[in-house]
Image 1 (cartoon, rainbow, N blue to C red):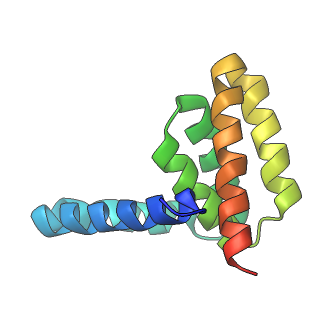
Image 2: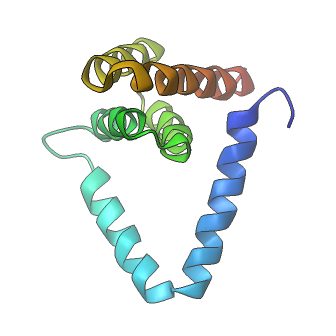
Length: 117
C-alpha cells in the first residue's frame, strides 16, 4: 500500500459493500435505510454519532469499522481533538486491546487528514 493505508482500505471496503449490495440488494437497501436513519442529525449530531460508532469499533476490535467511522466522523465535522478524546474514552472502556485499536484509529485519522491537504 502507499503512505495512506486507511484511504486505500476505505476504497476496498466501499467496493466490498457495493458487491454485497449487488448480491443482496433488498437486504442492503434495508441496512442502508437503517444507517441513514440512525446517523441523521437529531438530538445528537451526525458527528457525535460517528464518534460513538468509532468508539464501538475500537472496543469491538473492528479495524474496518474504525477506518470507515474515522473518515465519516471527520466528514461530518468532528475535530481532530474530538477523535482523540473518543479514542481515550474507548481505551478507558475497552482496556488494553482498545489501546491497540485506538492507535489504528489515530493512524487512520492521520491518513485522511494528510490527504486533505
